[in-house]
Length: 159
Length: 101
Image (cartoon, rainbow over all chains, first blue to last red; front, side):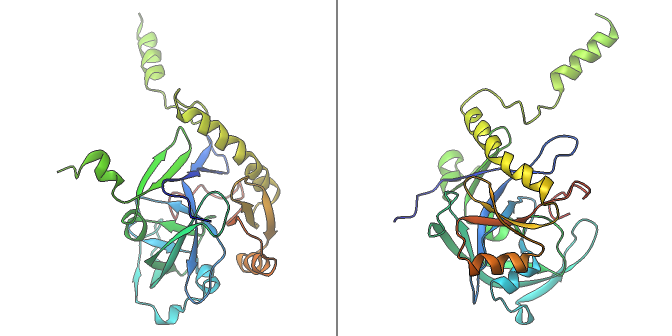
């Protein structure tokens, strides 16, 4: 069966309510190295420069962090964890639930030494936003992932 | 119009729109649909707080829960459970995270 064409539409994820409802823009991804990881929810975070993942996912995907490309300290929530970066394959899963429907690309993924969030992956600028056009709408509670050049078709280069 | 009336008027005009009151338009139907799908996950958060859960990618229903992500991933692979996504059910006592926290 052919993979459905972009755009792909994902519901926002409802987090534990606080003063008001907390909604997270998420998509579904897997990491691929020597193994294929389980699929996980990934937060779409335009404010992050990097794609980051929980340490357990490195083991799950069979990635060897002892031979990482480089490691740097990042500022995350007032702490400065060391993050090891490796090149691996990132797989975006179609929201329809068929695991055979996906898009893959090579990507640099950072693994911090510790991880607190409930979502196991964070998708930032380098590795995700430089691969697709992303639309998010709080009112609709939706994320749309579309082709890279859709932005130019709508807006031009903006210069 | 008194000063209090002016203040009330300004507050009403610029009050933040809560997500339960979406704007009218084509996005409204999608909003309602997503809200219904998320109900299942809300219940899971209450009952399985702190556990790692695998939720159905389409319905949001919990298909498996384990104390650690390692246990859960092993279980999913062993039982060839497909069409799910893994995450941790948050506990209401946890601080609300901004980005990675």
